[in-house]
Image (tube, rainbow, N blue to C red):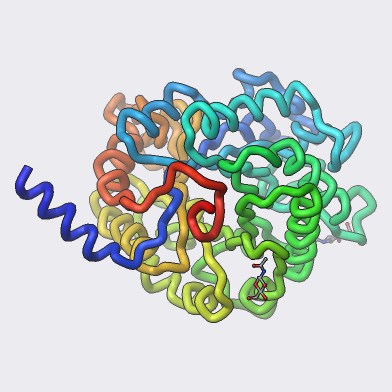
Length: 382
Ligand SMILES: *[C@@H]1O[C@H](CO)[C@@H](O)[C@H](O)[C@H]1NC(C)=O
Ligand SMILES: *[C@@H]1O[C@H](CO)[C@@H](O)[C@H](O)[C@H]1NC(C)=O
């Protein structure tokens, strides 16, 4: 008891400037079930809900929110090709059964559990062929590709989704997961069309916008077509947009290797300076690590770095979700490590990442500044 309260005081002191309002996990499973070895377009579409893909396990959300009294943010992945079937195309026409299942998950998180939810179209800024995601599919807004959905269609999609959640203050609009291999000017144009459509629908909630190159934080200022050079032009009439950044700690920042070698506090310094310069905020909605002891200091580093740099307002670790089984969202070596889903086990039956990474490491460093009321915003509710 004594040492525990001392630790709490120390934590408060170091977190004096902390502005992490939202923290939790990515719920990954809604994008599952479409991979095709032969790149057969339409594989797994629409798919069977609860069998090929799913959104959340309500018991898992309960565990994160109640049992541990901690996490207040869940990033729920879905596929554009399921929400907007190929037959009608990307836009304001939704598959209503699919939408209803998605809305059930979002409402459970936000209304029943009073936490926040990021709506996450997990599409890499592509639409029409997720058969070998992240590489397949036409880039949204590619005017040289007659099969590509347009920037205007992307805007129409977001306008409709925002209209349907306009009265739910606990949602956050995550415009797109990991755009890559496209001009950054097109990422900006698509993000901007989405922001404009969301605001035109009357929705005032927090928007998080990705940059290019898998929205990687470490490379934000790098290359001849960097996110930094272009994304600073983004405009939100309500000033309630933050950037959505991903940052992995392994050798190529892919999050697929067991060993951590890249310290976030070093690698994120340039993008942190850029965010400060322009007065922007950011969330890191993907980071992760293996349970190997050698990763522990890297996990501590990224959590402390976000907690002590006030441009960061939230984060979600990759990944929980009901469909992982023993497979690992981080990496596979001689065994699978399981996932962040509560109750998850590794392939050898030992405790999964929920225990080894979340409970034993991340949960201990959860910010004490999380909010449970108010509209999602860059200032933590208003
Ligand atoms: C746009 O489409 C053209 C024609 O299919 C293709 O050659 C080009 O690579 C595409 N651009 C992007 C960024 O995918
Ligand atoms: C948004 O920020 C700009 C630049 O600081 C400012 O001029 C404008 O009044 C702000 N708008 C709102 C709605 O706060």
